[in-house]
Length: 219
Ligand code: ADE
Figure 1 (cartoon, rainbow, N blue to C red):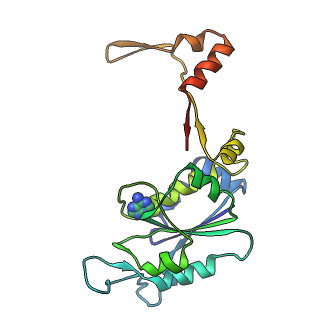
Figure 2: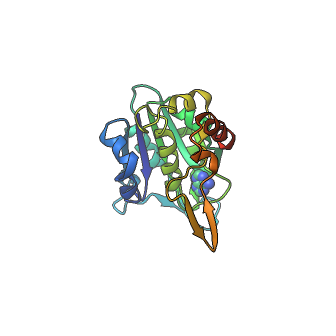
Figure 3: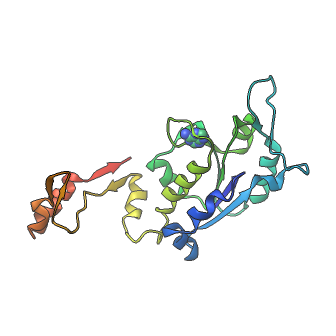
């Protein structure tokens, strides 16, 4: 599966992509991630990607033409592709949407910045406007990392566990029961905190029941 991220801050992704399971997934060729600097598709020598809004108002608006050129060049004509524009106005991203996105061969993510993005991007270039939550961020770069990570987990071989297939089928994720490891006892702020008895009982049936009760499903 291939992800293409269009941003004006490509270096924000350097550290994120160079560590942990995402780095491993790229190395193992389970996923391919390409980060593109939108300024490469700017029309002028100053690499301008924003302009004043028609009708007046404060702030700058991201121009449609560099984004259009970028998407046209990046989009492969092979397999299933989806173009996402991040915006707080978009449809809410959740586990079900992640499961749906995991069926695509190429996901192109446009990270908006400034006060907004020319509306023609949402209307005629993106397939979907996506919001990661009901709050306003400074841009779409963090949302792109969140979507990349959530969808990558569902690509076979990216995480060690085999339950990703189940998560994809059910479009929900079983969030595990609480975990404990050594020490068995620890004093925190003057009170002794211990590992639940059941986990030390050695009774696997009981443990399984407890874990089922304490687990949670994310939809
Ligand atoms: N850009 C700014 N806020 C956002 C949000 N909540 N989700 C997606 N993109 C955004």
